[in-house]
Structures are given as structure tokens and as C-alpha cells.
Image (cartoon, rainbow, N blue to C red; front, side, top):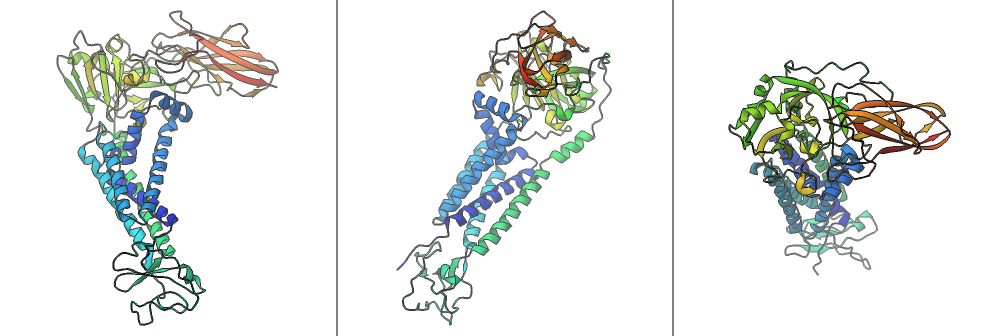
Length: 571
């Protein structure tokens, strides 16, 4: 009688998981060797997921996970891939072709995700292809390893070969029952099935007669040692691939940048710009604390020696600038507050820094803007685009191609080697990081990344104010209490901030000094706290006399509105 035999489902799932890890490790290693971390299929699939996700999903991810949204996305992709790999392994126990088909599908999806990214080449599909082949080989190897030769074949009391080593099975004792067969491929031509018997451990290790007279059985130990080896290979390849991914080389190049002195230095900060109150956001946000919201799963690695900015489109003379060319231009230094349109009222996605860069208007004048152009479609090294109104950039404000942040070359996460900084506009329409291309065009001709996803084409920053001290939910002692925060109204400036408690009368807060209308402004007010639960609200008025609205609106499509309020308990 011929009977097909299989390894247990858990063993197939384990083999699939390890094989999937090998596939991803090899893909990451090859991507790292090629200096193209974005060619790693997990990154490409994550980037595609970001692009395809509806705007409400993106808002939920940002509001729920903050700057960890991309980490959560990558983790989610890995979890899905792990589940798929386990299913492939279980399926391949009986049908090896299922393993090849599964990893073939894995490779096809990865290749499609990679080659459809705007910043990749056809060769960037190689890591995914090699990873899929490595995964398929690893799965086949592990499943074969799981069906090793019977230990001590022919030993007394166990199923096995006859003492002479012939292909004839030993006759079982009278009354013994044959064990269940467990080797894939049994029942095929050239295989004879034989059941183990007896009272020892070997009774649970049924055998299969392979072609040529060798008996085989499911071997847990060989599978586990093979899986451990595969896991080590996968982990080592992934770590090495990350190290070779280009970040170290770009970090070294960043460390070698020598920033020139600004032709127009930033104005000295007036006394009283920073109130230095514990818990209050400092006037200048340290680079490590500055918010980051963008679409890049992996931070683009742009070597400044290879960087070129191209200005073209509706211009008289297309312009190309290298990084060295940009540093030779007269550079301007200025303090500018940046805000993300995804920021909820009272949210953290706003920060103030001292920027150094070439004025965008100077570069655009070199190209010669045509009179009917009204949009700058900027593109980052990873393919992200944003549309900036031409009139805003050309109206005299300090819109920069920035090369430095708070006295040092831009951090990689904030756009090294060059990014845009435009006061008064939300980042999604102005603050392109890793910028490499400027197409001068029109809003009725071109659309940037976020516009077809439901966001406004033009995004002027709305007047906002935030309470930093105390925090919502704090428990305070009765008596003299400090309430403090920040407010911003670019490119107009903050003229007044008012605070009220429990919907009482509005009281004027004391404002810190500011070097100009393009930065946020600290404010503070004293409060005689009384026992009980209290609600504190804040609102700001800009220099043109407009007070921020009480009407609550979500970030989409052009920025959140409403008054920030907190609740505290006073003992």
C-alpha cells in the first residue's frame, strides 16, 4: 500500500518563517551592497502603502503613532509577510511547488513595488529577485532537512532496515500497529512506506523507504538546528545590509561639510525671547527634538557631492546648481517656525529653528520666471512633490534653500543636504526635504503629492496657540500657578494671547520678545488656582487684528482650527 507522508504543520510553518527571514535578509544585504536602501522590498511596499492609503488613514496614523507611524507601518508589513511565509511553509510540506509559487508571488509583488517608486531603477529589482530565490532555496533545504535518515536503522525494537541494510523491512512483532507515515513524497514511484513499531521513542518516528533503500523519518532536531542556522544567516545579512545602506557614507560626508559664514546673519535675539519656564517649549527647538512628518520610510541618503538642483519649466534659462555652487551663493540666516498641516489643535508638530540657506528668490531670478507661472513643483530625492505658490516665495520673505539648522549641516532626517524653508506655509506645500528639482509651472497644470489626496493646493499657516504648562490632566496645588505656552501666526506675527479659566473672562497674557513675524512667541500668565477641576483655554490674535476662531475643524483639508483647552485638578 502506498501512503503519502508529511512533516507536521508547525514544522512547515517554522520552515516558512525562517525562509521568509532569509529572503528579506538577502534582499536587504543586496540592496545595501548596491547602495540603494530604498530597493529593500519591505521599504518599497511600505512606501507604496503610504501612497495608496486614503488621507483619513494617514491622519489616523500620524495622530495615533506620531513620528513612530513609519515604524508601525514597517512592523505591520513584516507581520503580514511573516504570516504569508508561514502559510507558504505549511503548503510546501505536501507540494514543493507551492513553496516556489509562494516565493515567486512574494518576488513579483516586491518587484512591482520597487520599480514603481519614482526614485528607483530597473536594477533596483535585483535585491527582491535574489531574496525570493534565496527564500525558496532555504524552504526546500529546511523541509528536506526535516526528513533525515532514521537513526540506528535496523535497531531492535524499532522500525528500520534489516540488519543487512537491504531494502526489505523488518517484520513487526505480532499484534503491533503500523505508525503513521510522515515523509513527503512517499507513495510516489521509488518510495516504499514502512511503519515503526515497538515501545521505545522510535515508535513515534515513522519511517519512509526512499529510493535506493534508505529509510527516512521526520527529524525535529535537524529541522530546529537548520532553522537556527537560517535565522542567524537572515539576521546577519539584514544587519550587514543596513550598515552598507549608505547612511555611514552620507554621515561622513555631512561631517565634512564646512558651512560658510552668512552674508546676512540672523538678527540677535532680543532680551526676553525665551522665558525659560520649566516645561515650556524653548524658543529654539533642538535638532533632536524637532518634529518630523514626511512620507519617507527610509531616510534618503543623498551624498552632497552628487547632489544637483535643477530649476526648469516656465523659465527663460534652466538652471542647475551643485552643492558647492549653492554654498558659494550669498547665504541668509534667519529664525523660522515650521508647522505641519496634520497638527491637531495643541499638537506637537511645530518647531522653531535657526536656518541658513540661499534665498529661493535669488535662484529663481537666475532662471527668469515667466509672468504667468504661479506654482513651484518641488521634488525630493525620494520622489515626493509639493506645490508652493510663486508669489509667496517672491514677496521678500526669507524663503530658503536651507543647508543648515541651528548652526550645523542639516540632519539627515531633516533634509540633508538641502531642503526648502518657506515662512507662513504649512510644510506639505513648502518644506520639501532632500529637494533636487524645481519645476516652475501652474496650479491648473500640475498637482503635488497631497492635492489629489484631498488637501488644499495652497496651505497658509493658521493662527494657533498652545498651552504647554501645565499639562492636561496634571494635579496641581492650590495657590499661585503659572500657565504658559507658545503661539504662532506666520508671516504676520502674534500681537496678543488671552487665557480664560472655566469660561470666565479673558485675561491678557504677557508675551515674550520675538525677532520677527516668522517665529512662534512664548506667553505666560499667573493664575491663583482654587481647589477643584478646572478647564483652561487659550486664543491668539495676529498682528492684523484677526483672532483665531473658536470653531473646531480637523486638520484636513487646510489645517485644524479651534482653541486649545486643557483640564487640571487642583488639590
